[in-house]
Image (cartoon, rainbow, N blue to C red; front, top):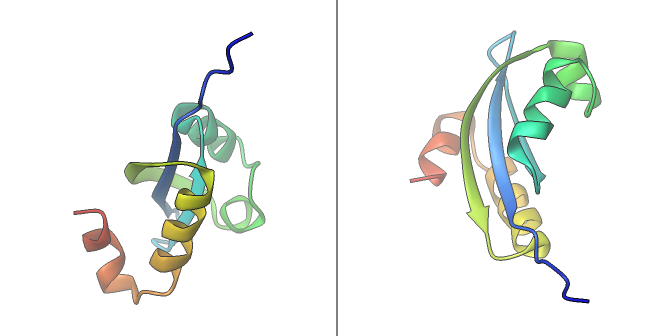
Length: 84
């Protein structure tokens, strides 16, 4: 049996209070639907999901988590530019 490698993504979304949330997933559409339902993360659940801003594919799950950490260390005004 051949194991299919899933693509991993790091993403940033905007909450209803205009704050940003950064996370990782292997299915961006499914994850956004989960956030929209008020589930998936305590932060987004409490603040409300507004919209996905950006997502970027990563080499693997480990790389996605490293990217997430790097983004979370940045000041707000630099987070979106990290994706470019």
